Length: 285
Image 1 (tube, helix red, strand yellow):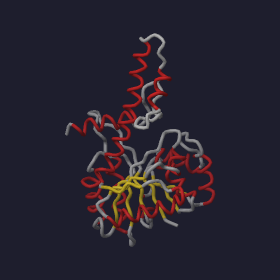
Image 2 (cartoon, one colour):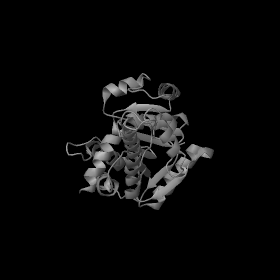
Image 3 (spheres, one colour):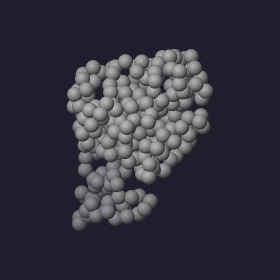
């Protein structure tokens, strides 16, 4: 079983951590928020996700999941997952403060590590962040070389709010971006062991493609929601028209599909808005 560190215990990080721990991996969650850590220590999730409290209780009780604010706990890990938040700046771009802090902490702990570690970036970051921001910080802080002393992979998450635990256990695909073939092979091998017979399709590609797949994914889903709401506005002015019938009709087209065609409130949540703003901002740079 692997020893795993998860930096950032928001919805993505905590769901990821408890799912790994439930399979018997030794997982340590690292987060600077003491209030959040105290709630997790009591097996009280700081936010609601179906099954999360059950998984959290099981893994804390079994001892496979522990938490700390001390990044030094990463020293003995085989994999270090970066799952910290990437909020919007005032100009719409992505604030990488938490990503840079996590990279520094991981890099500093790597300085003391005596074993190869694979650093996995799950945080949503704009293209080239892993290559031009995270990698240099890791190398500078650790005094070590990526591809030789440690591995670096981009592995974006596609967890749905309200389904995060299920999606962590049963993803519909795994995207692995890296310039280091050995690191990509190691990460894919880990997931093949973790998922077993339910292993989903794997996309092996560059850091930049992996980072953009996440943005393109969210932008397309937001577009579908906005599109059907526009059709709903037309329906309101059209006698005998029904948007649900229209959505069902176009959803039967396999090129379109039925999901995200429920007219109603516009898209929201914690991801679509900030990710679209960041993509627009990035496209103008």
